[in-house]
Image 1 (spheres, rainbow, N blue to C red):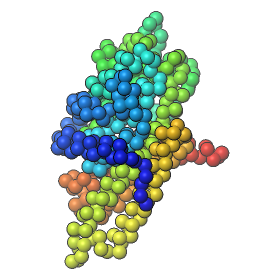
Image 2: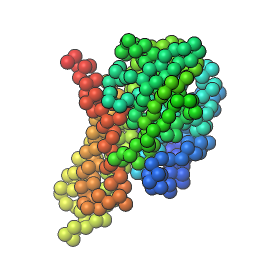
Image 3: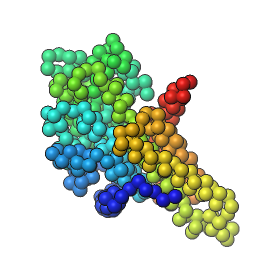
Amino acid sequence: MKRTLYDSDHEAFREAFRAFVASEIVPNDERWAQDGIVPHALFTTAGKSGFLGMDVPEEYGGGGVPDFRFNAVVAEELMRTGSAAAGLGLTLHNDICMPYFLAYANSQQKQRWLPGIVSGELVTAIAMTEPGIGSDLASMATTARREGDHYVVNGAKTFITNGINSDLVITAVKTDPSQKHKGMSLIVLERGMEGFERGRNLDKLGQHAQDTAELSFTDVRVPVANLLGPEEGQGFTQLVTNLPQERLSIAVAGVAAARAALTWTLEYVKERKAFGRPVGSFQNSKFALAEMDTEIDIAQHYVDDCVRALNAGELDAVDASKAKYWCTELQGRVVDRCLQLHGGYGYMNEYPIARAYADARITRIYGGTTEIMKEVIGRSLGV
């Protein structure tokens, strides 16, 4: 079934971003995976090329087009090449962190931060997860105590994407530790603040080119002017409001990753022979390929409708949870089956399917686990 999500502007943007990925990311991907991080300069290069802040108003240097379809194109092209991990920091910057600055930063904060975010000079991250609490954000222990014109922040975060490269970290804290959800606020910590330390660049199963770090805060003095939103206690509401876009971003990438894996596998099984025949000509292979192609197409059209709903301001938490749950599970199933069809070569890192297999596993965890997604959906059913 033909996709109708994109128009000529999006396809022109796709062509430009595809060229950017081919020249700036693919040739360096293996080295960055070994390093465990992409250079900070990748963000400034992307910014100069117009691939950051497409939805940021032009007065701050952005594209001035609030259309998530451009973000979707970026995710699809990164997945297509198998270089998703190297570009994950860009999608986090655009899809997940940017909405907080656009929606909750006041005019002074926007003037301070948005131009640098759009240019890539200020790399962003969001710090929610803490050691031992997982998805239970209301139980976080990081605190921000008000002292005059500053907050004094103490605590620790873990599994923070862009944790090493980031210059601005949207940090979830308790400004009122006596409260659970209502005591939470979002404060922006900046690189160089005394007491703000970055720990290990974590050694992960997959997504090796993406820096994922531990952060610690010891009596970090943060200006009250760095509070996001008009008052304290709004953090949980802000997070919940932005989670649908975050989860849709992951779903878009999940479908695109599944499609990429199937494309590589189709090429492989047409060329690879067993018992004198192409592997793809056996009935088992045909059935497996047919099943995956069908499931991917069905998921793609649901996700495309979710993108339309987001652009219209109508995407809710339940539909986004369905997209995130289904598409990341689909990604895992497809990549696993595609690796199987590669046989022993699928286990070799020289083939993109091997890295895709390792990269896919985390998608069912970050952004809210599959179990949390099912809980959100189940509550909507009145059970």
